[in-house]
Length: 458
Image (tube, rainbow, N blue to C red):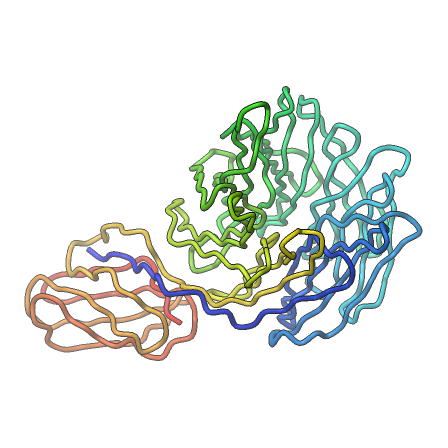
């Protein structure tokens, strides 16, 4: 059989940026797929007046432009997205009304909309489709809502949903490749407690299904994503009772739903006294990255944290980050390419009364960590560490003979790695220079044929 590779190399920090405007907090990010630039959107308080702050970084971490949006109202930011043309969409609230703001790629303000200001109304999740239409979701009164706008900001429809709970909220949206809109948030279940909410809508806003997830006394979903097969992944936090009615977030909570809403798995992981998840990203190599934070109540110190899962929910590795004498935590994660991501968050002083936006570009291990028998018994490729092109591949064969080792990319193009006689037992062969990506590895010979499902090489 073939086993998959478990990569355990340390995180490489490619660059770090801090941005100070005023009292900076709650930042999110997204990628411009045409240029690879990163957009960071955050909220900053200026003399108790909250404003939106936008920063555009290129791949090297250089600041392309910055913008500040300050409407005549109080502006609270809750999310951002970049459409396929590079336009930036911000979702939030403007003094009780839902707020939507659009900038073009060059940082020019296109328009902003304040929606239904006569009642408690806000938007948190935001996404766009292939036609550049905009979807925003959040809360309206005690119910959840989803709104679709044209690229010009015209309201196409707005729907309000009552799932039967005293309070319902949507905090994150994702437009999946199959044309569905998916969202995550929470619902009040009584006694001051909440459970995670996951929703799937069709293109006209009809609910295909919704699911409630209860893990601990209080659970909150914070972000949602989907893979190319339509499986949904949510992350958030579970809060535990600490006596006398006190609850604290002590665990990352991550779950996977099949396209029809069937719950596949739930994972609950804590890294410190208090831990929580904020952002989730799907890496095409077959990994999930969850970003959040952890807090040590004894030292009064906070750190950013990343957890990496395989698609079956196995925790592969975790990583924490803290700048010396500064507290930090992550609020979002954006996958740039297999093995490269951006994490966005905050960095604060020891007393937590001064904070800046924080952005890190990271290179992280990519690989397959799930072991599974091949379809045809044969040679055995044992766990190894593959980091960069030219790394040695360790594998074993049961008997000596002539073997052929071929690597194929997802399009089916083949490259011969080795052809010749191999002795029984362990062998080592260097991989050729290959770009980052997903590969299949075939080993045939001596009457056997084995295949790995996925091999990542970078």
